[in-house]
Image 1: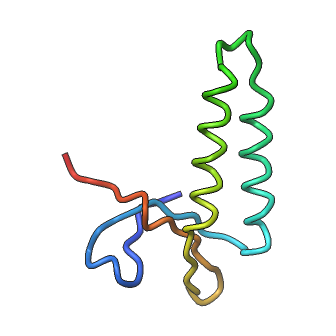
Image 2: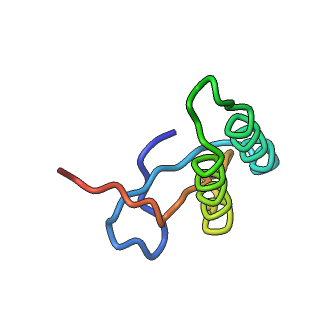
Amino acid sequence: MFVYSGRCMYGKECFGLVGDLTNIPKFFIMLTESVLAQDNDNNVSQYCQISFLEQIFYLFENMQTDSMGMSEIIYFPNLVIEEH
């Protein structure tokens, strides 16, 4: 995972993942499974799980990809990294 500035981002930075695009569904499935695996022992309420799942689906719907020659980057322009 690293910081990336993609097409039409005008210098804004977001986080990105480099890899094979065939692994995208696996990444989101594993992320979703980890949220659903949380139980009350970890004090994670059902509301928090649903809220987090909605955010995962939002990420999936709004992701972008770019070819980087031998690999590809999956990036999320709606998750802009701001300097503090």
